[in-house]
Amino acid sequence: MEQPELEKQILVVLRSSQVPLKAKDIANQLTLSLGQEVQRSDVNRCLYSNRIVQLAYKDSYHRWSVRAASPAFTSVE
Image 1: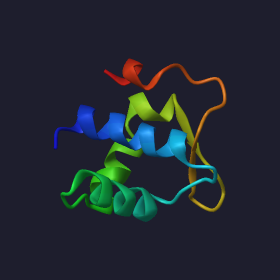
Image 2: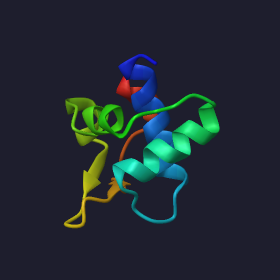
Image 3: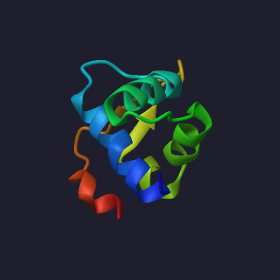
Image 4: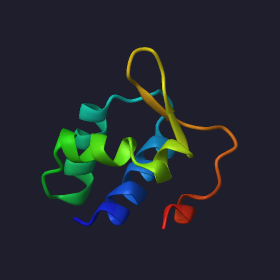
């Protein structure tokens, strides 16, 4: 999967979650929903990209959440 598409899917997972998620949990949810294996390292690469860092944040336990006032996930493009 190309990085821009994976970034969009990560934001979808984060927006739909009621709690902050670790990269491994995001990868597991994407693997189940997409029907193809998504590696934690690929999720981390996207999470630390300049585009997602503006839309999501990491807490002190390395769990990720969407920023409260973040624009629509289509702006990742």
